[in-house]
Length: 166
Image 1 (tube, rainbow, N blue to C red):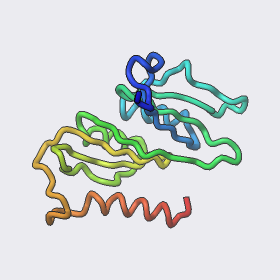
Image 2 (cartoon, one colour):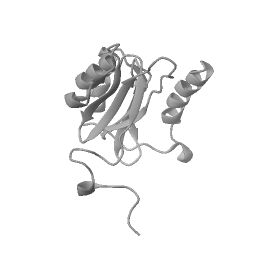
Image 3 (spheres, rainbow, N blue to C red):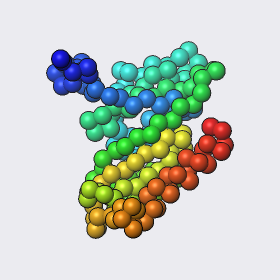
Image 4 (cartoon, helix red, strand yellow):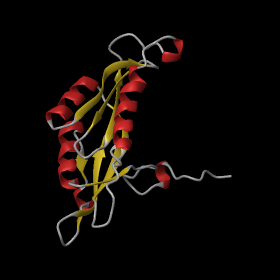
């Protein structure tokens, strides 16, 4: 049986099997944020404005992946994304994001598997997981007596969002 998903040469040129999509208020500003924080490159040919000027579709390449974006249209809900990005230096990226209005969810912390992890929420409500090569010791899992900070920091933000009814 052949695989259900398409990969590699079976995809249109420049495409990936899975592409996250976020619907936000202010997609053009989010594109700028992604360019400045993650060195993203907008696919200009994909930018599709509505007559009102809002974007119904836009694409920003981040490394070998693509983030698809649109502005919420009248009657549409905002639908932020949860995004995982592998970076070279989590603290540098976190600092860039904070300088552009993001909030820190999880400070750079040793994580399982020899990675450092940080999390941020951008001004549009998207939550980004930043994974980088570890600069210190590997974390001890909470179930082995280690810290629960990794879970607790995200849990608090998601419960806050649920309480706000968003």
